Image 1: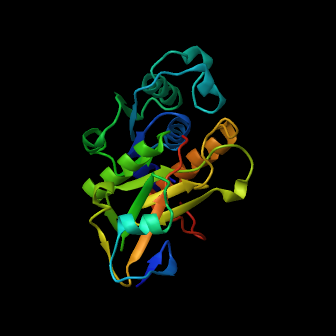
Image 2 (image 1 turned 90 degrees about the horizontal axis):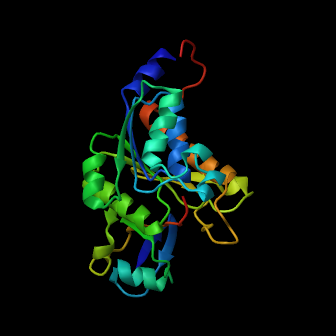
Image 3 (image 1 turned 135 degrees about the vertical axis):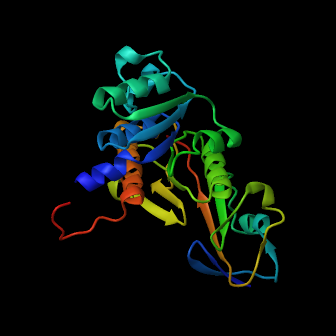
Length: 67
Length: 199
């Protein structure tokens, strides 16, 4: 399955992928992330159920403490 | 310039958190004449804040929202400041920032940053969020940037987290706060046009 992750083409084995699986795959263990699929926000409560499909544009924006 | 002033005077901007980012960003927006600012924080001014936050020694112990309102008033008493001494949660965000077109995310903790961003993008989709992410330490001017994702703008280096070795310091915090203020202006006024007189 080919998707775009943070504006770069990426490829994954398998035909389905949830946000949770993607974050695990990418080793994004950093807990504070904002995720969007095709510009639509996915809240953290939906990571386990939200499905990513072929051709989707996925953004994972890390949030860094400090202000 | 009159048109710009009029547009800004009619604008309302929210500031979520009045620490290093929020206090400096609010002062920049006050100086250019943003008509209404909704400022929110639950903390009091401490001595350790003075290395970067827009407060003064004689304000130690005061609530940040009260001190910030006073500092804004000293620049422009015509600016309406709605001050909330409050720890924000999702319900608070949708309530206090309802009148604002743009909300500046100026929290310290990443968990709070996410709460604010998710709440606004999900529940107030007509609004813009200008967030700060990555401002610790010093130097590396060129790592500081602004990135857009729909109605969300991220200002900072997106990598350096505050720690004992990388404290938050006035120059870099101030740069990011002013990147945020500058982005707010672009949202409120549109992109500047060049080669035009009578602005």
